Image 1 (cartoon, each protein chain N blue to C red):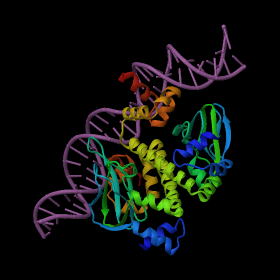
Image 2 (cartoon, rainbow over the protein chains, first blue to last red):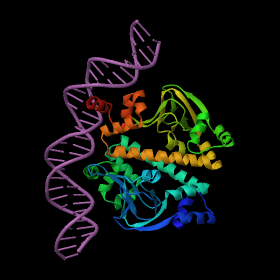
Image 3 (cartoon, protein in one colour):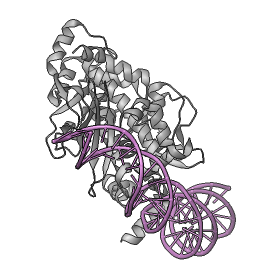
Image 4 (cartoon, each protein chain N blue to C red):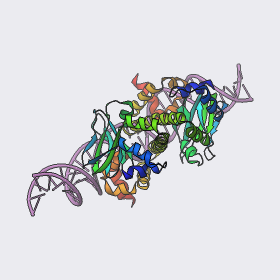
Length: 189
Length: 189
DNA sequence: AAATAAGTGTGATCCAAATCACACTTTATT
DNA sequence: AATAAAGTGTGATTTGGATCACACTTATTT
């Protein structure tokens, strides 16, 4: 739970009492490779804060093609957020790519923490602000960039992921075919 | 300012005293058609809450092509949010398509209101949550849908905009060429 | 260590949408 | 009301990237 405290305190300092109040709202879970945290169609009870490991948040279209909405690593939050916030069934999957640990928490917890502790409402607001900006940047990239530019941007943002996960997943994240992505780095250097 | 109060109270009720405290952080501005609220390169002092009119938030790539990040109508917030939050220069434009009025407010105001009034921090958190979900839906659409599906989705979400703004802007929002979009509705019905 | 599965590179082909071009229409401007 | 500007539909052409196909490589599994 020390990681949780450090994580929150990157945004707002906490007293010991405050942290004692926050702690019980989170539980720890070990996750093995290939394990699903969320499965399409299921109820989405939790959001997750990644302590370690790598995870992909993705969905599958009618033709069975996969699209990756988000990769998550240490200190990232993840869920099928539409389903989580709107309390509907999942339209996405979360699968573990490298085993690790996560903290999980319910929507009721998030709301209770936000109500009881102004600091936590602040924390979530700041997190959402940053999330919003990241998504907007991604939209701009999807609207106006070539596969080449998308790949370069990805390499800049997540140099470590480039090494650690299969390239085909990167293609699914960038909205480019596996083959096109492969030709990018074989041609260009 | 009544509109502001009603807008906030959709999310959290306010006492008269609270609203008196909030009011001074917002100013009114009338905006004429074709007027710019934000211009690329400029400092971004304000975010805007639309009271009336229609606005487009867009950017221009190296080749001079335009891409629309957001349309804004009554009760929508808009800014070049990366520049606004990170206090950097604008990489986008906001232009008025139909004249109207907006309220504007600074980053300092947003932060002060959030600090002083837990309710306002809550308000902004809820707004950001919804914004986040909307952007994520848009990413999914850009990743996996055909021009046809994008157009249908747009028609469902903004049936009124379809009538009121030039179709070429819709194309710029959907990430599809003007011509392709035009062929969609001339062929399909 | 052998067998199976998952991931990757690369050529050949195809196709949806971009681009180019231009006439027509609607909307601003003077 | 006349002129200019902006927006739109539609054909012809081009093209970037998807798809298909398959060999090779690297991981898992037993």
